[in-house]
Length: 280
Image 1 (cartoon, helix red, strand yellow):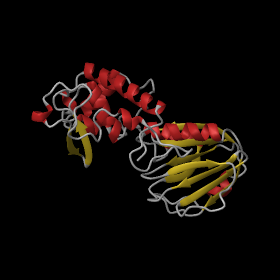
Image 2 (cartoon, helix red, strand yellow):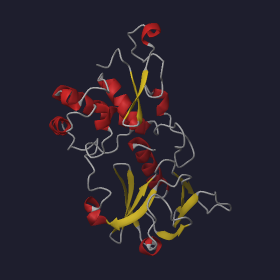
Image 3 (tube, helix red, strand yellow):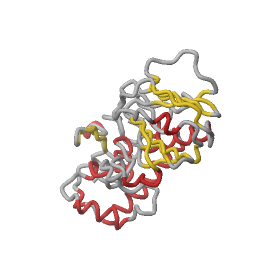
């Protein structure tokens, strides 16, 4: 599933490629995504002008001049492509085609776990999708006191699982949680109650640093993710621990023959990767 850096990359690419233009037509070839695409969505947004692109958590938000916003989630395998002309042949899983005055946006989603809907722009914060959304990693609301306080509310939860809790910090996914904890030298097994304020400060700094580097690299391509121009992200080449079971970490101080290198465990049904020697 695309995480914050991938969603930010897609959003920026669409904003640059399409820009603030008019939506001429929306064709929903298959409305059966994670939530059914509203039947009246085309008539609600056709002829409206796009005035802004932004990201909330892992959602792309496209604001329109008629007081509505399109909400787009990529799901597990969703991809967006841009083209000047409508393709002569559409792919099997091209579920949504948006014709604008600046070209076409095509949404392809083989697993159909994505979401495409709309809502009133001034009611965004109150809708169910965002009602429990935590603070943005780059926002001023993410402070040491905030994070420490929220972790104290989750005392018995491992810190890795807390970083994946979208009601605390919105946008961090499985890849980046492992990388953040590695850079912070914190074991993913430690409970939230054991994390100090100083360590919260490290987590925040490393969260912002790693996510910013990942955005600059165009995100991480492991399976399905591609940028709208069809190219791959390359932050996976900078991963320190994620998906590197048995390998030495970049700052390895251990005897890998004895330790076995980077460990892989399962927490909350998700894979976690960490260095047992460096992360305490």
